[in-house]
Length: 202
Image 1 (cartoon, helix red, strand yellow):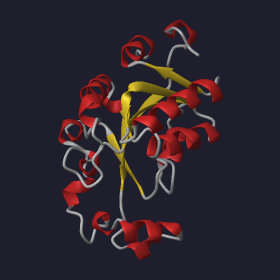
Image 2 (spheres, helix red, strand yellow):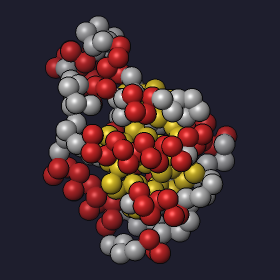
Image 3 (tube, rainbow, N blue to C red):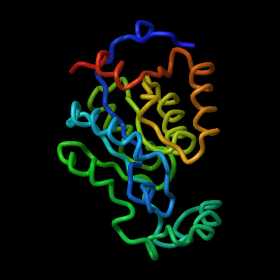
């Protein structure tokens, strides 16, 4: 387990990838993530320092369940209120505290859990010569997890800001933190927001 930031090298050629901080996951949203509010100031602080290097992702639900393949149809029949036939457009927008940073921050929409799923993200990062993705957002054990594994598969160095993640499951969050520390050494680094500020200086 990492004991100090001295074990994590400096961060260069990086982007801040902020996952799915949308109204649907905020307080009162259909998929409310209770402790999003707790990490939001930390995420906003990171974005404010790296506005032009931040990419927000948005999980975009289908118009109707039949617009998605396979098991996604069953999923969205269960969550029909989350489809765009029922959900107000504002539900898929970024929370206001972060939306104000776009632009210069970019927004990439995705139809599935991973930020790299059927989106332009991978080619965008490769074109820009990005080697490291700094990850924050929601939820630790769903969309963040899927994005981290995709980034590892694509060869990016992954830096997870552990106090800038949120989940609706404490058990899931804690399990993932343990997995990152013990199973992905050399590919995934965990840092605090304070450590990130010292390690990433553009």
